[in-house]
Length: 278
Image 1 (cartoon, one colour):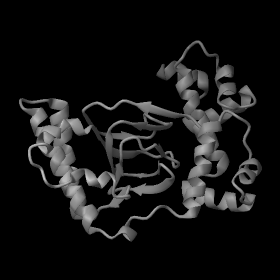
Image 2 (cartoon, helix red, strand yellow):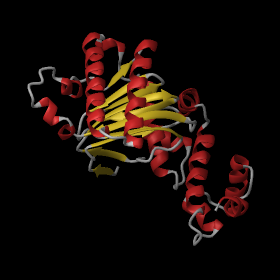
Image 3 (cartoon, one colour):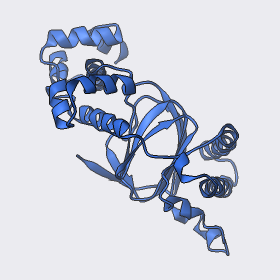
Image 4 (spheres, rainbow, N blue to C red):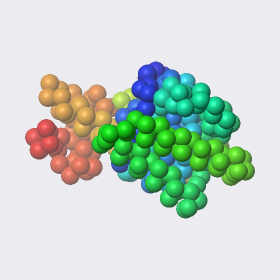
């Protein structure tokens, strides 16, 4: 499975509503990352652990840790992503700073679930950072440094005060479903069957049907078709692909089947969709 490296900028922060992540592959970077889920439910893979992340949850990712987000439900989620390098605030930290805010990245805790009051505080801090970052008024870099330190101090206090059992890794079942969803996302263009995936993950077909539907909200076929259609939409933007070629590239065995599934999900045929949107 491919793992990509991305070079971090001194500081980057955004608040976005999404269905697809802009980094669908496993990746790592040379910066520290804090992700906050404002709304929605996603799965997050960090190194050898898998987490089910719901609204009001912080993820703490150390630099060079391999990670990946999977939105198995295909519904909209909103998140704040803060990525920075220690150089951004090292001049402050080198001036006699005593509180080890970077210890949150080596504490062994990747996930922290916040109560309502904590959510209000962190969202207010993030919103201020996003505004400074996007508008860039006079002194915005200094303002961002101060706000970043406030965020790190706030998170460290929570990490140091909450019990470790409050924020556990997902259950074995969730991990299995995450792995199966990840496999489908990577191999959607191939011929996939429930029997094949069940054998690969050492579970029965009946158990697969049950846990997959319970944890993703989709049957296997519904999920696979949604992944394929979403990929097809991306390919339809490239006008040098014929509709039949697009269907084949995303795993449909016939143009007729591709057209029927595509219309069932989007409400129109691939050709009409291309003409309307692109």
